[in-house]
Length: 627
Image 1 (cartoon, rainbow, N blue to C red):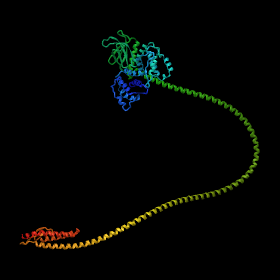
Image 2: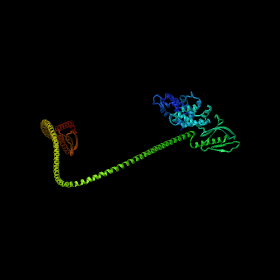
Image 3: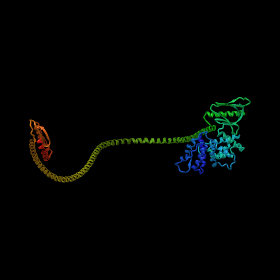
Image 4: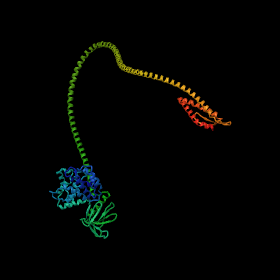
C-alpha cells in the first residue's frame, strides 16, 4: 500500500466526521479548515485560494467526497513527500476530528486510554482493506488481537473470538474501527490482568507495526575511540539501527545505516564479554554483546530481516506481511471456491449415481414385469394358435368346397369377360373418336379466343386513335381560330401599311419632283458657273495685260495678280507659263467646287475674291506703274 493510499484512509475518517448530517457532503468552510490543517500536518506550502478556484463554478452549497477528491489529489496528496512530515502527527489530527464524533468511551470499562485508542485506530488503518467504508476482515482482527495477547505474555484463545462471531454474524463480513475499539475495551478476547500491562502491550505492538520497529532492547556496544563497553538502548528499523542512552529515547547517541551490503556475524567471547556479534557496514564494523544467546539470535535474525527487506526494495515488514496474508487469504478463498466446486461436482456425481441406480432398479423391475407378461402372452398365443388351427382346418374344408363351385363360376365369368373385352374395345374406339372431336373443338375455341383478344385489342387501338383524332380535331379548331385571329390582325396591319405606303409614295413623288427641280437648278448653276469662269478668265487676261509695266530691254518683269489677290514679279519669259498655271488652277478648282454640291457658293466666293483683288490693286496701281 503506497503512502497516498495510507493518507487517504485517515483523511476519509476526518471528512466523514465533518459530515454531521450523514448526507455525504461537507460545507466549504469546514473543508477550508480541514485543508489548512492538512497543509500544516503534511508540511506543504499553504494555498488558501486553491479551494475557491477549484469550486469557483459551483454554488455555495456543501461538497461531496467525490467533489473534494480532485482538489485533495491535485493540491495536497500529489505534493506530499515521504519523510518530510511526521505521519503520527498527521494521523493524530485525523483521529481527533473522527474520535470527537464517533468515539464514546463513557460507560465502558476504561481498559484503554485515549492515547492507546488512537494507536489502535492507526493499526486498524494499517491492517484494513482498501475498500470504503473501511473494515478489517476477521483474519486481520485475529492477527492484531493475537499480537496484543502475545505482547502481554498470555495465551491466545481463538475460541473466544469465534464465539463472538457466532453471536454477531455481521462481524464475519468485516469489523469497523469503532466495533474493534468496543471489543478491545470490553476485554473479552483475552484474560487481561491489569490496565497498565495491556497499555504497554498496545504501545509495543504500535511501535513494532506502525513505526516498523523490528527489535528493541538493551545491548552492550564497544566504542570506536575509547574501545570501552557501554550499555545502550537499541531500536532496529528496516533502514537504520538507532541507539539511545536509555529506553526513554530522549538522548540519541548514534545510528547504524543498513544497506544491502550489511553483514551480521556471531563472534567468539572475548574481553570478558559473551554472546558477541558484529554488524559490518561499508564504513565501519560495530561490535555488540547480548545478555544471552537467545537474545543475540533474535537480534541477528532481526538485522538479517531488515537487510532482506532492503534487498527486496521494501520499507516495512508488517506491510509486506499484510500483503502476504492478503495473498494467502485470496489463495485460500480461491482454494475454498475450487473445493466447493469440487464438492458440488462430487455431490452432483453422487446424485447422478443414485439416480442411475434408481433407474437400474426400475429397469430391472420393469424387465421382470415384462418377462411375466411375455409368459402370459406366450400361453395366450399357444391357446389362440390351437383355436386358429382348428378354425383354419374348418375354413380349408369350406374352401375346397367353395373352390369347386368357384371353378364353374370362373368359366362363366370368362365368357362374360370376353364379351366385356369386346365391348371395351368398341368403347375405346369410340373414346378415341370423341377425343379427336374434343381436341378439334378445343382448337376452335382457342382460335375463337385469339380472335376475340385480337378484336379487343383492335377496339382498344381504335378507341385510342379516336381519342387522338378528337384531340387533333380540337387542336385544329384552336389553330384555325388562332389563325383566323392572326389573319384579321394581319389584314388590319396590311391596311395600315397600305395607307402608309401610299403616303410614302406621294412623299416620294414630291421628293422626285423636288430632285428634278434641283437637278435643273444645278444644271443652270453649272452653266452660270462656266459662264462666270469664262468671264473671270477674260477679266484676268485683261487685268494682266493692264498690269504689265513698260521697261526697256528684251526681258521684262511682269506683275502677276492671281484671282486670290497675290502679287508677284516674274520674268517675261515665265509670264506665259504662269498664266497657263493660273488658268489650270482655276479650271481644277471649279470642278472641286462643283463636286462640293453648292456651285452658287463657289461662284460667290470667286466674285468676292475678284472684288478683293480689285480693291488691293486699285490704290497701288498708279504707284506701281510710276515705278
